[in-house]
Length: 414
Image 1 (tube, rainbow, N blue to C red):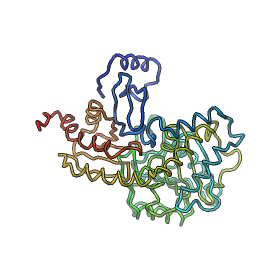
Image 2: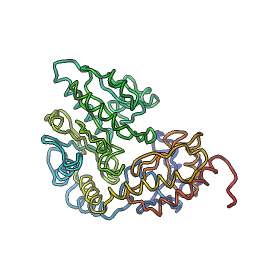
Image 3: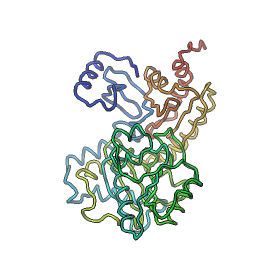
Image 4: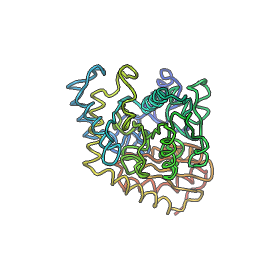
């Protein structure tokens, strides 16, 4: 994607190219600072960040609660490894057990703290396999959904649908089968006692904000339970208030066996969780899994500050209300070729008839917006949950012109 850069950004680009592996392509921007929902590049240009570090920076940049928590903790106790417990680690696990299900997690639930969504899903996959291997009947099969994204490691990648992500690294973990989302007959046909578990994202974020029907989630829960398989809800992107609820699966009322979290949990600090509900919380025993950095006190302190701030600042209500009104405003624009505005809370997908989404991203940078295209036709908005209605309105007002620019049309003289 093209971009206009000044001297400072050009210099950083050259250094990046000479030092960093080319796994992400040329950086869209070189960012040096931020405050709230805005970031600033190396040339001093300011942008409204409507990607939020890919749904990570739920309190925006430099939030005082996170800054204070990290600063105080690193000055008190940094890394100690998981041979030892720390108060921030235990406090965070307890907090997650309170919010993972309405009314709290069932008895016996436990938390494994990791560093990323990929690692949380690796942990979940190991629990699924270990649980299956303890049964009398062989259970070699794991079900996932078309368009799913569960991570980039060889285990999580086996659960990820997009072939271009998987094929360079095959053979991967065997036994994974992909089913069409929201197709209950296909799910019924696939489910038998050879299934060890099923992974679902209540909202498929990387696929372009595609919602799973509540009826489908109910069917997945009942069918997995009926054959003794585990159901994993990957809430890495959709969880932690992103959809206006603590967890996106809460709307359906199901209780999974495992829930994975990351992204927004640390407010920008790397931390994740795999939560085993009821009996799934005791599948892994000493020595069966581990991590050096997972749940370290600094990141755990940040996560505790994030969860406390979400509650004290009523961000659940804010995300739900702002997301609903913003989607309505975007729909009401009547932008030619904008086929659908979908999503829940502050996870929003804009679907266009033609393949202009990457060009809208480029036009957005020129107009001072950080945007993201998940496909040639789809924009994803996943801003900080502290985004204001006035900030959201600036993008709404700008969108028609961004679309015209992306299509190479003349500016509207009005």
